[in-house]
Length: 451
Length: 137
Image (cartoon, one colour):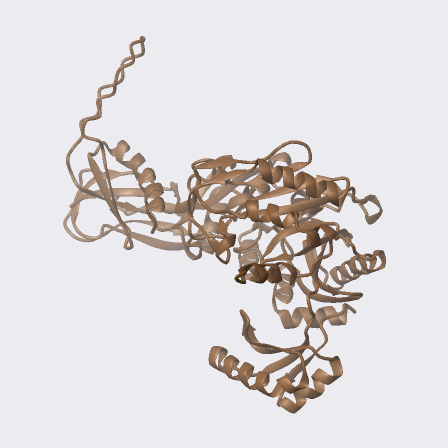
């Protein structure tokens, strides 16, 4: 087992990793930027190094300073958390070159899953269903032929695209010529590459992901699914739960089977998540995240497995201490992200000083956070302040518990998502379970309309 | 930089200020200039109960000093011969370098001046922003 681990992250996940290390008897080294000097993740670590000024490119993404801090302090491993350098294959390689174990999959797998086209091809080869679509189409006529084969509605997408640029929804053949021309022009202007391809457009699918763990000795298990369909219009997740509500048992078993098959096929190691779009009885692979995820606690609470400790054990070369038959979920867990942002103003991020901070407690509540009364929310990073997680015997009891917990929560000084999420929990449609990714955006659009 | 971030940075500098016993310190790092000053009337109110007498405060000097801090995380390698406190620098020169993953990051005096403090020793690990030298201009 490792003796000392450098935690290459900030915020609640740095603290989460610190806790796992200390429970395993491993010493920790924190890194921080000038703006995070007073953060809890710095205080709880055994040692800490300032690695740069506030902007992440110069601190939390500063590979030489981070590796140097690990070497100076005598670390034998680095945990990257999520975000920042977590899915940076070069960082994993550089760490290995300096004799540091990267707690995550191999650089080759990180690279393969990071490139969307490669990931899709590898998954297809492994028999995983991917979104039906075409390669590059050369003309409107070719696009029409493909669209008729896979069926309308379709999505025209720029191959060089990103951020919604060069993307058009096409609901009927008549819309195709205009959509094709505008998407192509937009892609040409934005990326100097006007090439388009056609993909099946799923209307209001659910976002369901499967957690996997794989050791270096061929052991592969899944830890069930999480439903992350409650997403802001920017596609950022806001409320997550496990297991997915109102999911056909056959479909659930299929998702789990696909996930473990794919994990074995790409020779994956460590913790990973396969994200799927689910529409009716159709399942399509979206992407594989090669890191611990923000919403991992909902899985931990129903499976009783510490995913971060498992990551560390796997990276240290240990075998999984359990098989699929040992894993049985109990109850239902739900997570709410407490973000420093204004739900009434397009979730605009807020920075400032937190004057009052009171988090909930009591039975079945877990709070993962790095903030406290008087702490400063810097303008440089992700706006998440805390994750509040509730677990109960049933979905309804977990939701009731979460409503109680959010009622106890007081955060003043910046606007947060606490009251907004409490409102969402009371929504009839949410209560029924199984909403799609379009639910929250359409609810927001309805609210924005003048009465 | 926001005011909050400057405040955080200034607090870190206050340590260097106290250590050096100066009245004020000014730090420039290209983007920002921060000056920290010791309060001029700092006579503490003595509690009435018996406590050990505080040591006499170090005499403070009303001088302006530039603190040269590290831009990187690494190991300090002092120039040879080593720069010492009290030394006059009559030209811009290299005071040390900080070694990061085998790369030497030079630390220069950024002009002439009088070395009033050397905060580090040979082979010492330093973090980003750590004070290395103070130079009176």
